Image (cartoon, rainbow, N blue to C red; front, side, top):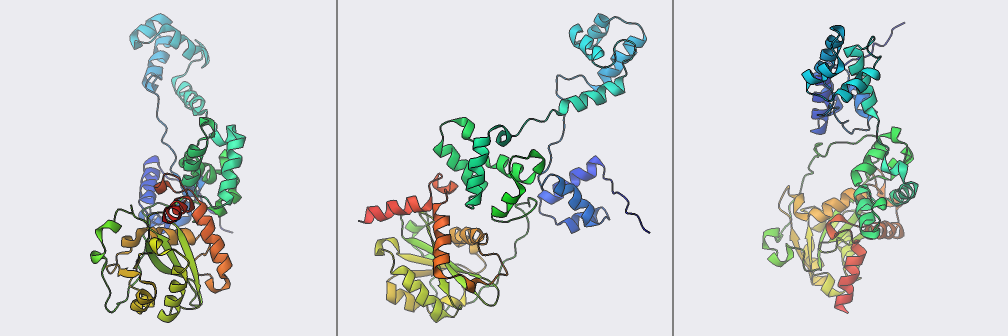
Length: 385
């Protein structure tokens, strides 16, 4: 019968481990650095939910290990407390308290005193969400509505004047991932967009997808400059998200308000997609749908047909440049919370898509100063009446 031996890492190794993890290295990559199995790396990373623990540091005013050694030597030499304090340039009362709390004149030991000081210094501060149950309840309810921690934090700051009802998004993340805090249930992690059990680095590698060619495509470089600053509403970005069994959803985002529309499509043939986009365009006033920026996917090969039917000009991104339609890319990532990769998207009807779009449009957005897209879009609608 075999026995599993416990793997130990030095403080320097742990520091390097966290450094590589936060730079986006995989657990397998990190494990290979130490010639260890990735499982031993995961054990350490999962302990704090993928959030690097703060390094403990001795307070500047605290007694050092060397000073405690001097106290021990002084007591062995029968020096008075005042003399020891004078040599260390410390207050006699500080030295007296140090000796009393660590065994007294006859039993003081520097090593034991220093270890005890480190233990006493832990005194973890209670999490704000533990101390404020009302705040924790509000945060939990918003998480269940699929709001992100950043959206919750921004909305709280905008809604409540009482700072006791304010909390940073980082505190919410830490409370979710570090379950020893106990303020938010682990089950709430399922409402986060990524649904990860541990926090991943923002530097983790993302793979780019290939792009096709479009005949007579008008490049984004010819798009009017007034569109770039997002000050004028009515300019949209679009794309498809794909699921299993060749299922797709068409996604549209208005650049000024980040307002989202979703369209059910049965396949990605250009005739199917163009028909769905024309139908969506006719739901809006012409003042609020002037241009559309799209990726170079073949689904918009008949873009001229769309422009003739709607009088909406289509512009195409440069190859391998999804950042040129950044609002839509960000929205597609948010949509994966509702439509995970590898799932069949054809099972969702238009009513379900509209419900998801409504939820996204009602979320406060940092880029809108924590207004929601629907608030901003309704202001645009009102201005056209």
